Length: 375
Image 1 (cartoon, rainbow, N blue to C red):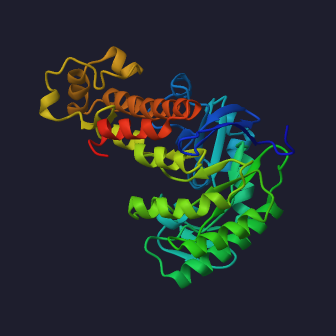
Image 2 (spheres, rainbow, N blue to C red):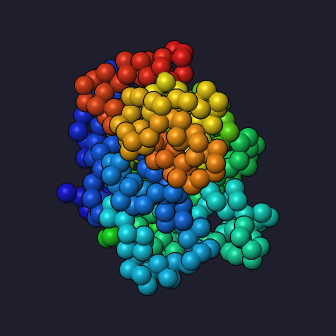
């Protein structure tokens, strides 16, 4: 057992790659890692019911502090008994701090030492988000894992600014620790920043990890930089993170990033990608991405992915789903989203199985050969 409400149990290390298999335990159940977390931004995974997401094998989802603070308000969620009851989700929930949304959605914004002044992307109303408010909102939501309020630098960012930013992120973490009211029920994760500078990442990691927290995340990646640069930053950062705590790479969801992140020792990933692609009729399959509205699928009575056993592929043809997408029927968007979420959850199950059998490197090469037709 652990002194924290969320803790990591190591199961096996892949002798071929060094990737690790584990279990993260939370007050609302456990999940095997490496794990992909479907994103339920506004207390719902877009187009999916909680029961459907659970049926695909997801045991943890992510919700968004910024959006739920803007509407319906964290007070209502607290009154409803917390986010789990409000959205009828029985598994674990992670909430981000709202920082990324403030820096990416809210315009204009003014970053000061106390917090961030911004206008809502919904109605233009003025708001001020601070580490203390982020903690209060997340305490109200009652999620199992809560994230420290941080600043996510744009790519590219000048080194001098990235240095000042990571120092502010550390000071904000210290304020989050002081403001966190439910440490026995909710696990606060710190976030390592530092943009694309290896020495700044090391500096940030040392500062963040010096605070004894239940887990740690890497933020500020997958923000437009080349993949090889992201891997370079992971290579220098992950070894500085504790081996006995969960490691979370924020905002990553393409198959290659998931596999490469797992190889480098990451345990948790999240991204809106599967539902965002699905709403527009783009589908991830075992043989790569397809655009289901393309004419070549007009009379294709086979499943979108013949190797997939998800609900969409077991019950409907590519031609039918193409028809729904072309006709702008929401069921078509749901089926594409359903498949994409299931695809990434199944991919991570295969990754865990490969780690268990010490062959993740071989699995990566075979997967890339089919999905990307390269490597």
